[in-house]
Amino acid sequence: MRKTRKLHYLDISSAAVASVRFGVTSTATAAIINGLLGDLLKAGHLGEDKKHLICDNKKVFHAKERAMKYSRTEENSTIERSSITGIFSSSARFVHGVA
Image 1 (cartoon, rainbow, N blue to C red):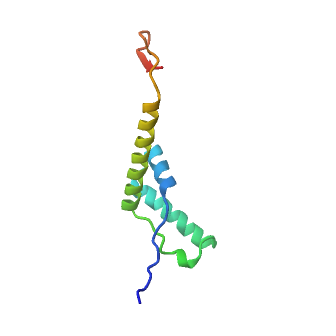
Image 2: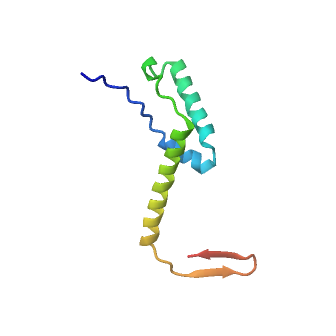
Image 3: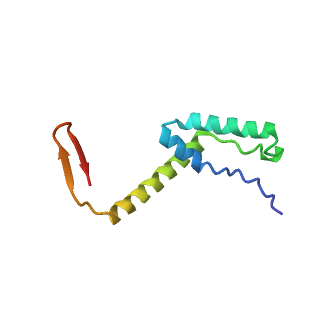
């Protein structure tokens, strides 16, 4: 009979998106996540059986890559559906834009 392993899964997709948005490193994000988990354990919001839910910088790095890939996919699908109606330029302040 096989022993079942504890699932070491912790969804950090929201933290990864915030990390990308604010330019926080993967190492710093992992430290923040682990600090929060430690505080939740101390406060009793998480049981002792959840001590295995730790996060390292590689996990954050891969979650950030997935978040950016999803964002690019969503952006590209939005761009394909939109159409450019005009291009304008202001020579006064060298401001360029697409309408």
